[in-house]
Amino acid sequence: MSITSPIPALRGPDGTGLRAEGQALLLRRAREELHIPLKAVARVRVEGRAVAVELTAAPGAAPHVQRFAGVDEAAAGAFADAVNAALPEEPETVDGAGYISGTRLGDPSAGKVFRAIKRGALYGSLAIVALCVLVIATGHAAAIIIVVPSGLLGLFFLVLGWAASSPSREERRLRKHGVTVAAERAPGEQSTYVYTDPEGLSRTVQRFADTWTIDVAYDPQDPGHVVVLRSRGMRALDLTLTGSGLLIGLVGAAGAVTGTVLALLGVDGL
Image 1 (cartoon, helix red, strand yellow):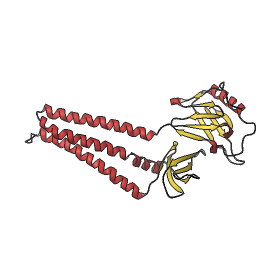
Image 2 (cartoon, rainbow, N blue to C red):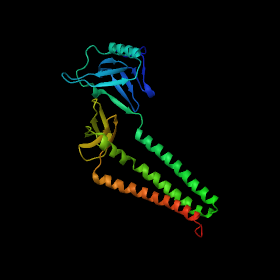
Image 3 (cartoon, rainbow, N blue to C red):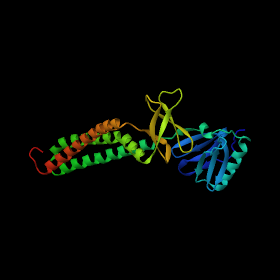
Image 4 (spheres, rainbow, N blue to C red):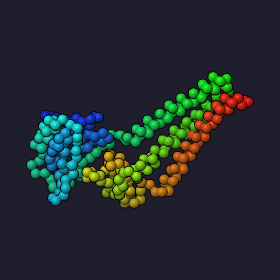
């Protein structure tokens, strides 16, 4: 029996929601959308202003639960009653989490990096303009031939180095604050590995490796956000490369500031 339109769609904060579509429930969270087939659902419970979708489980096993909070209690009750009425009379006796699939709705880390790049480029450009205005206002316009190239070179490498170091910084954060697990290679796949989150949902991560398992770390607040943990040697190489870019950027920025200071001091030729 399929779920039909009279069942209300539940709406939560920040565009999240839980709705019925065909033979499945679609649970949209801030960073992902889960597709939960009806055959994986044992029942739906109302817990105040939250809806708990209890999944089927093997005999004697504790069922996994997907929760959606921040909804209207009356709508939640109507939703739960209608979905429960549409469920099979005898639910399957298997772990329903194995039927769930998820789609990521964007990488929050990528968004943070992009915003940091825009801010860095903006503030750096304003700093270069300010230095140019300063040397012109003090009658040393010739210093621009040092300030502008050095400033742009420094800005480019600082922004590039900061952006390139983002994956390493995220790996360090999840090594310290995340959950580390072993991901196993998916059957018949060469670069797809699978790990299980605390709610029993199997999640995938892409990595080319010669081993059957790899170590990964995921964010406990967002289990779909995961990084592959690299060896100490690879981390050191990455640190060297990104550090070199940042160092060049600092040298360029120092050159722009030095040119401005020399001009203000009235050094001959500037």
